[in-house]
Structure formats: C-alpha cells, structure tokens
Amino acid sequence: MTTEIINSNDKKSMQRAAELIKDGQIVAFPTETVYGLAANAYDESAVSKIFEAKGRPSDNPLIVHIENIGMLDDIAVGVPDDFYMLYEKFMPGPLTVILHKNTKICKAVTAGLDTVAVRFPRHRTAAELIKKSGCPLAAPSANLSEHVSPTTASHVFDDLNGRIPMIIDGGECSVGIESTVLDMSGDNPVILRPGAITYDMIRKVIGGVSEPKKDCKAVGFPAKSPGMKYRHYSPRVKLTLVKAADAAAALYDDAYNEGKRAVIISRASSVASLGGRNVFSIPDDPKGYAKKIYALLRLAEETADLIICEEPDSSGAGNSIINRLQKAAH
Ligand code: TXA
Ligand code: MG
Image 1 (cartoon, rainbow, N blue to C red):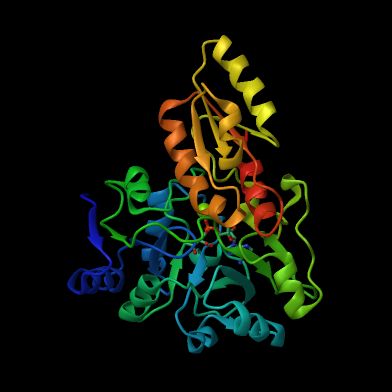
Image 2: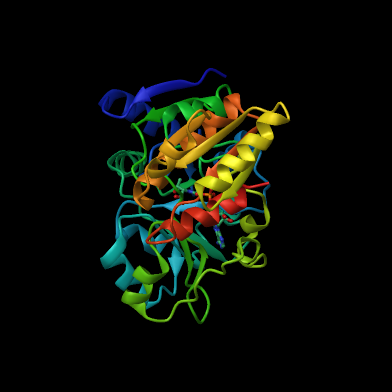
C-alpha cells in the first residue's frame, strides 16, 4: 500500500480523508498532543486495522475522540457530574476520561472492557476530520507499538509508511506528550497516565483525585488499564535519564571511552557546560521540553547507541514528562 501525505489546509484532501474513514479505512491525523491513527469507532473491522498497522496487542484499548459534547451519549453511560466540571474547564484539550461504555462502541475499541476512554481534542484538524467523517474516531498514537509517539507527520511516515493509506499533515503538535488519562469509572477518580493537565489542575476543579504513583512501574492499574503493562514510548537505542548535566557528562565520557556513540539531550541552560560533546538542546521550561522531547528522541536514535537525557524540572507538567521518560528508559 502507498501512504499518501495530505495537507490539513487542503479542503478537497480533507474530504478524501473523511471518505476513507467512512469507507472503513484508517487515517493518521494531528491532535494537539501527538498524532493519532483513526478509524470509525462503530466499525469493528476498521478498528481492527489500527491494531494490525501498529502491531498493537488486541488487549490494549483505544481512546474515542469526539468533537462536541452531544456525541458523548452514544459513547458513555452514567456520566458523573464531575465530568462536566472537567469538561467546562479543560475540554477541548489534552485530557482523556474513562467512563462506563455505551454498548454502541465496538468491542475491539475497548478491548472487551466495560469502560471507554473519551477525549475531545483541541486541534482544528482533528475536529474537522471527526465532523466530516460523521462518527467518533477510535485512535491510539500513530506510532509502531512501543515506539516513541509521533509529533510530526514525518514521524508517522517513518513508522507506518506502507501500512496505512493516508497521513494528514497538520504541522508539529503543540503539547508534544500524550493526554492525561483520568479514570472516572470507579468511586474515586484516579490518574492512570499523567499529562499536560496535571494532578493539581484536576484537583482544583473536582477535589478528590488520586495522584499518580511516583514509581513509574506502579503507574496505572493493570486490571483497569491494560496498556500500562506494555513498554511504551521507547527509542530504539538505550536511554538513560540523569538529573543534572555533570552526571550526563560523566556517562557520555565513559561511553566515548568504550567506543560508543552517545548523544546528550540537555536542557538549554546546561549546554554550555557540556562543551565538546554531542548535544541536542531542549528548552528548560516543561512546556517547551514536552513539545520537543519525542522529536529529539527520534533524531537521537538515528545516530547514537546511547541517549543520555537530562530530566526537566518537576514543576507543572514536568512530572508527567519524567513519567514518560522513565517508561522509555531501559
Ligand atoms: O494524547 C493522546 O491520548 C493520544 C492522541 C492520539 O489522542 N492518544 C494516545 O492513545 O496516546 P494510546 O492508545 O497511545 O494511549 C491510550 C492509553 C493506553 O495506555 C490505554 O491502555 C489506555 O489509554 N486506555 C484506553 N482505554 C482505556 C480504558 N477503557 N480503561 C483504561 N485505560 C484505557
Ligand atoms: Mg501510544
């Protein structure tokens, strides 16, 4: 299969993208977090193509993307009042909520669970694709299973060329890490995956919410969120995290002496102290860091045997990024 890349500003091409979805095909599209790989959430055979193209285990459920709140009734039942508080504050935006599912959503989407993940993306092109397709879109991140999530159309192409018919190019994603996943299907809301909408932000709106565990291996509840048991977000070469530039320099020099090719992803403020080494600079602030980290991991894996990554500081969404990096580290 040839994979066509279309421009999100081209109305005719966008119409063709929607026709593919209506026809039971899959299409990669931009969201504000990362690129997704979409199928009609009501079409079992279309959804199965997502799992096939990504090499994704069938017990890992997908997020259902909507573009207006009226679509929710067909997807979820027994929606708690607190959901609507979060909706007012954060949607559209990088927050996914787990609710009890409506039986209209096909089994493949939810991997047989009685809950469903719902997200209302903030990206104009994502909204347009959902509207033109006339159905909610089931979509995981548009990477090969276990690889780093894509934040540009060319990242998607690198992973899925020949496996999907179309990629909608909408430029670089503005957030850069996947949405926060909040489970509201139980008695107390629990964050299963931290993201740009942080624990503090959610707590301010609905009060009680359980914080993500600091130990990344404990994040998520295997029985609740099957995806958490799989290795995620990993570059193809070894990744080591460090808290400060001097530790990065020491690891780099050891690797160099062993004849290995290392790359340091260094906060901009540390670059000057790493002179003479192979360094990719990343913004210090968590927002800027999140936007660039996946692109830099993908770039680094092209040329290095070892990626040494200086963590962002833990303010704001910093902890969410650290969670992702810990899961990616070997
Ligand atoms: O930002 C995002 O969330 C991106 C964009 C494309 O929307 N999507 C994304 O999807 O990151 P994915 O499939 O890569 O990650 C979704 C996570 C997985 O860990 C999955 O196991 C979990 O959400 N999940 C989905 N449905 C669930 C459910 N019913 N119960 C618990 N966890 C669920
Ligand atoms: Mg993913």
